[in-house]
Image 1 (cartoon, rainbow, N blue to C red):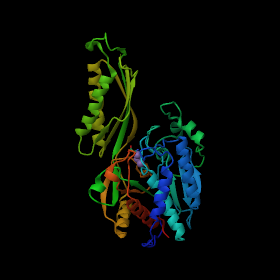
Image 2 (cartoon, rainbow, N blue to C red):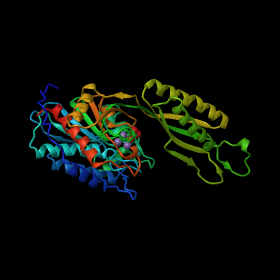
Image 3 (cartoon, helix red, strand yellow):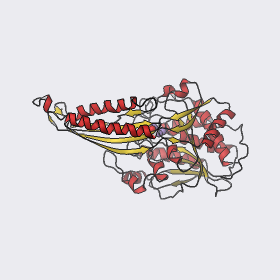
Image 4 (cartoon, protein in one colour):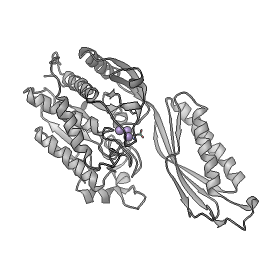
Length: 418
Ligand code: HGY
Ligand code: MN
Ligand code: MN
Ligand code: MN
């Protein structure tokens, strides 16, 4: 982008209290007894959260556009609106036992940047956009990072609208029911830069007493649905040798997923997060088990080797248990490095503000992973308490959230020009 970025207004700072207040306001929508948030994608609670974001964005002087998969683009005009927008954002859908900050922080930090610029009467050369991406979590609907993936063309819109949750409700039906099935077409090639602020969701920053994580990239991920088919039978008369016990086979698969990750240490991850046992009756030998597999690694080759091992060993488990094991891939994206020029802008931004910083690799997936395929992209991490996330006790310090938002402000200003 050929904008001569003037020296950013280095003493400009966001209003940390206003940011914290907005986070606590949003956290009320889907608040759980343990202090977390359950706001699953495209539920009525997600609608309420979206409505809150739109009201905040409009109050900050933005125009709103919504695309066909419900991504919300809040746009603050610049002097030259033909320039590609400088974009930030994240997600407001949460895990069932989610926290106040995962995703929500990146969205409201973007709004806080706009409020700060408005208060200071600053007009940027390029327009700015704050985005809420649909269904980043992949908890109710797969694939994960659904909205940003559709936006950059990783998924066809019709494919996404047809995806169903466990109750058979499609994304298209859910979007219509919450009134966020948009028609606007936003060009993914017209983005000058994308920044995403996020809590680290791991222990590294806190353990090193560092305020800003300069995110150099994110692990690759491959998710699978596994269906194990045995045969229901009576738990009493059926001798052990004659059983086709799907849950016993699942127990071996769980061990296999765990061991495969351990065998590819130190940056490989393997998790079975979801398991449905059928018929789930005390005195019936389980006939069917449906389970998830979440593999992650910092190299595509390692991911490939982990998956090959999974398939090979699963067939041995199937043979031994006289069951059938079907493995279907539902998510795949390779490890993603972020743009050096933007990663450096985040680092310099932190240093200019006098904040401690260090390089980190994200173990979590983020919408930034897909945006990095169409625009220069970088992420800003801040610590979270005990590195815990995807847990209702997720917590973060107001001063860290404010610091990350200041880095976001200056990184966006530098890119957009004033
Ligand atoms: O699974 C992830 O990495 C993200 O939280 N969706
Ligand atoms: Mn997140
Ligand atoms: Mn998450
Ligand atoms: Mn995520």
